[in-house]
Length: 160
Image 1 (cartoon, rainbow, N blue to C red):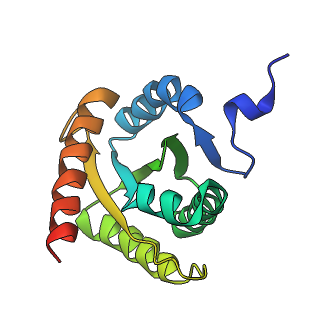
Image 2 (cartoon, helix red, strand yellow):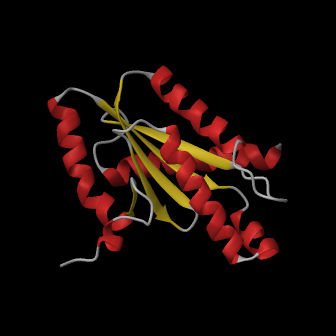
């Protein structure tokens, strides 16, 4: 019997990479059958190495847990939040009809992010998105597109 912690993080509805990669084909097939779009969001914590270096890895881990909780609160019950690696998270938001739906989710993410209270640490994120099937039909293609957009956002954050 496989340990459940391999599949799911210690928090409900927060999965990890090992379960998400094979699960994507099922999500995509369901979207195809229902003629729906999926928004794939790649989220990275800005300056996370600095947070770890300045405040310690325990503080960094606590911030990631708070961020994960905040992301779960920001999305719909049918959406999926996964820890993708390091300080990156992946979100699958199904049944996205237009950019306004995604904008609403992004607004909730940023509003909830502002509510994370952690002494002396200001948490900011960069987000990239890609739409299935418009911008890719494989998880790899969607992640490349979302990563490119996330990187462009990081550059804009550095310029501010």
